Structures are given as structure tokens and as C-alpha cells.
Amino acid sequence: MALCLPWLAACSNVAPGLHFDRNAASSGSSNVNASAEGGAEATNAVLKPITPQLVKQELEIREKMASQDITNLLGKPAPYKIGTGDVLSVVVWDHPELSNTATTAMGVVAGTGADASNTATNAPPAGFIVDHEGVIQFPYAGTLKVAGLTQDQARNLLAQNLSKYLKNPKVTLRVQSYRSKRVYVDGEVRTPGLQAINDIPMTLVEAINRAGGVLPTGDQSQIVVNRAGTNYAINLPQLVQRGVNPANILLADGDVVRVRSRDESKVFVSGEVVSPRALTMHNGRLTLNEALGESGGVNPLSGDGSQIYVIRKNGSEQTVYQLDGRANGALAMAEGFELRPRDVVYVAATPLANWHRAISLILPSALSGAVGAVTPVANPR
Image (cartoon, rainbow, N blue to C red; front, top):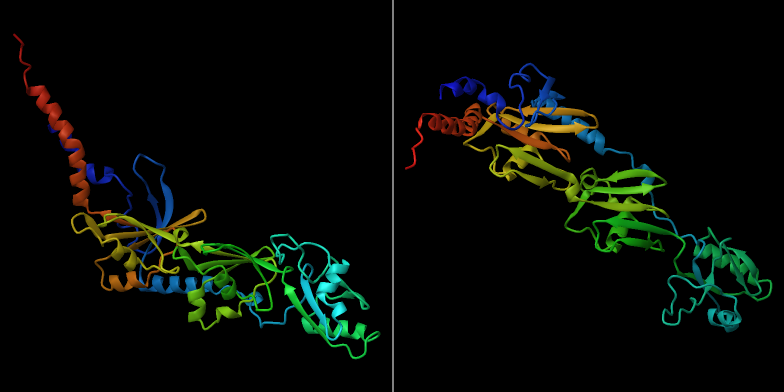
């Protein structure tokens, strides 16, 4: 029994879990070693105390990160311009022989569209398909370059060419099937897939609504728009707070919209809390106070309120923030300190709890050995 007594002095240093120097943050940020159970190699980390100045600094950094330039996505709706693959419907008044039905029968219209009007027979859509060169063939008018023109401009061009053969031709031209411009909506929406751009301006809100809206598992603060290889992070709740109307974000042909899952923005709470768990952020926002509250708070029996840590990894660097819950204004600082995705909140145990756990691991084996040494073995008869 006396052999175990020298070990008890170092019980708090060998207890399982993460260990930090309690005095490392007393004089500002410094380099500390955070080690894990099992003899893993120590990791150098910067330990910073959570103070009102740090909370203000973190808020400025967060606002700077959120103020990404999205001016390339903003704009005013413009009339739809005809493109390659669109199907045009043309009617020349008082000349039924030039209608879509007649020209289709004559073989002027060619090709089958993905949105064919008669899916049962796989018949081509009745209309004039804009070919790969952006032109259509129309009786008497000949070859017309319509790609890049609005419906009104294409109608005026057709009427001008027909006026050489018809007196004051009245023409109605409209896009019957929109197939030239598309965007792709992916992620946490009800019906992900391709969305055709038509005469209704394709805004970010319109694209998400056509896809059935954001699922409950989707994060409206984590929407990414990819245009020509450049990613633009969109935070819808924050845009509204800044007075920016999301309906002003216009999508272009080839844009990819992805709504990320809330599971990609989790925060992990462990250590001496009532119920350790992984928490999902609320539209990209979760404070330290909210994380502790949703985990039941610091365990009153074993948790050390002066050693509340937030472990954050930025690339190859690791920063550990410490909050002394016993200090004046600690709750206000915890409410103002906003967490980031993949942060780890850790509450250390008290020295007494570490000592008790170490004894519970060492003492039973020592007692059993001592009892076995002094108990005589009975001789069987």
C-alpha cells in the first residue's frame, strides 16, 4: 500500500484528456503544448484569453470575411436574348401557309428537343430551332441570324425581310421552348437539377424556389455560386441584414448553385459538460454561450469553469481560446464570442476530479495486490 503513495502526487498530470497550462494565458497570448491521452506528440498552439478586446477583434474579422465582393453577381433584369437550341414560334398574320404547322410538314424544322411537345411519339417541337450557328431558315426571308437578339428584335428583323415579298407583314414571334441557357442547382434542395433560363429573370431566389426551396437540413448562410471557376459565398440572412435584396443576384448561363448542409457547419462540445454533443449552427451563427447552454452547461460536479477552451484550426495553425467563467462579465464575453464551423469547445476538469479519477484507476489494483500478498493460501485437505 505504501508503494502507491508516491504516485498520487502526480495524479492530476496523468489524468486522461487534454491538458493545458492554467497560467499560460495569464499574461496574454503565448505558445502552449496541448497533449492528448495515450502519449501522442504535443502540438504547438497559440493560447489567447477571451477578453472584450478579443471579442471585438473577432467580430471585425468575421464581418470582413462576410463582406465578400459579389458585385459581379448583382444586376438589373434584361430582356431574354435568343440562343442556340431555342425553339421559336412564328406566326405571319393572314398567311397561314407560313405558320409553324405548314413549315413543319414541309421539313423546314429539324431536330428533336429534350423538351419535345409530344413525348409519346418523340415528335420534334413545332417551331423553328436555332441551329449551332445561331440562325433559322424562314420561307421568303431566307437565313436569319437571331442568336443574341431579343424577341422584339428578331420579330422586326423577320418582318423587314418579309416586306420584300409581302405588303406590311404582321409577324408574331416568341420563344416557344427555352433550351439555350441553363443553371444547375445542387445540394440541400428538394429537386436538384438543371433549371432553364427563360423570360422570367433567373435570380438566386428564383432558382432555389424552382428547385423546391431549401430543405430543413440546408444552411441558408452557406450557399455557393460558381461562375467561370470562381466561387462566391452567399449568406442570405446576412445579406438581408445588410440591406441587400437577394433577388438582385442574377444568375447566368452555366452557373452552379450549391446549398450546403448544416452538418458541414458543426461545432463539437466535449469535456466536463452535462451532455457532450455535436451542435449544428443556426444559419451560420452560434456563440460560445449558446454552445454551452445547449450542452447543459459546465458540469457542476467535475467541471472547472475557469478552464473553458475553444480550439480552432486554421490550415496548419491552431489557436486555443480560454475563457475564465469566474471572471466578471464572463457571460457577456461568451455571448459575444461567435464560433466557427468545426470549432471544438472543451471544458477541463477540476484538479480534484482528476485526482479522484486517477485514484479510482490506481488504488483498486494496488489494494488487490496488497491483500493478495498478506492473505495466506489455505492448504487443501
